[in-house]
Structure formats: C-alpha cells, structure tokens
Amino acid sequence: MTSLQRAIQGLILFSTLLGVVFLLQARFVLPPDVFYFVASGWALFVVDSALTFVRPALSYYLGAVLAAAALFETLSQPAHFALVTSGNLLASVTIILGSIAEGLLVIFAGYYIVVSRRKKDPWAWPGNPES
Image 1: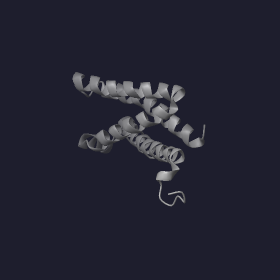
Image 2: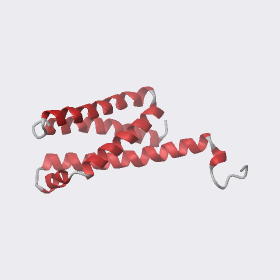
Image 3: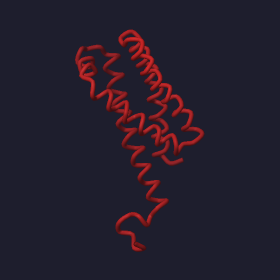
Image 4: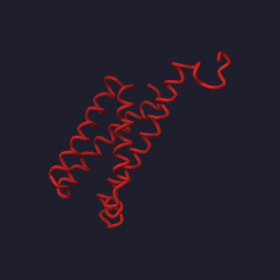
C-alpha cells in the first residue's frame, strides 16, 4: 500500500470518527427527520471505512463521492458559516476539520483514481508514442 493509499484510508477513517462528534452535536439542533437523513449518510461512511480494509479501490470511489457530497452540503449552508462565526468552539472545529478532511479526500482520491486508470490504460493519454 502506497503512502497515498494510506492517506486516503486515514482520511476516510478520520471522517467517520469525526462524524460521531458531528452527530452528537447535531442531535440537539436538527429536526428528527433531518437528523436521521444525516445519520444515514454517516452510516455510508461507516460502510466505506469497512471497505477500506476489504476492497480499497472501491472504497476510494465511494469515499470521493461521499466526501464531495458532504463538502458541498457543508459549504452550501449559510447556517454553517454562522455557526463558525458564532464562537462555538467545538462546532467550529468540527466543521473546519471536517471540511478540510473532505476536501483532501476528494483531491487525494481523485488523483489516485486518475493515476490508477492511467496506469491501466496508457494508450488513451496524449503524448503516448503508441497512439
């Protein structure tokens, strides 16, 4: 396993663990139906964490999609920005660390997916002397 793969695996596991902290905070703030929807998204991160040990390549695809969805949802909500500026330290740290982890996961997993596909299919890339 390369260092990039370990970084991706670590970010997936970190996101899952940080999700526990987020769910404990969100339990008191969100309406029950929204909370259960968010908890089901976290359950997908738990599945992805298990996949990192069994089927890492599949886990990287799922992790990139989940991280992109979580990052989009975080950045698209003005309430999250208001929460960060409100001075609530634990909520701010959770949102900031989660956003950083999701952004890095999207970048690293995307890079790994492109590079691994490039190694399997070299003829499709420009500059290849065989093409």
